[in-house]
Length: 76
Image (cartoon, rainbow, N blue to C red):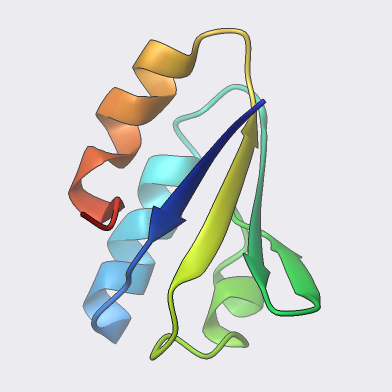
């Protein structure tokens, strides 16, 4: 499992982020405070407060591929 802090700045970012998550062949969750949603669910991601940094947890055996796919959204 790998964890990243990500930042989504707009609704367009959310849409593109969910499309990228659906390219992963593993489970991915977004965590915002006490709320955890499926990162592959557009409705779930829209329910979160995008003004805060979000924690992305990806359950993968290939962290390098996951990082490459999620790179545009990883907070510096």
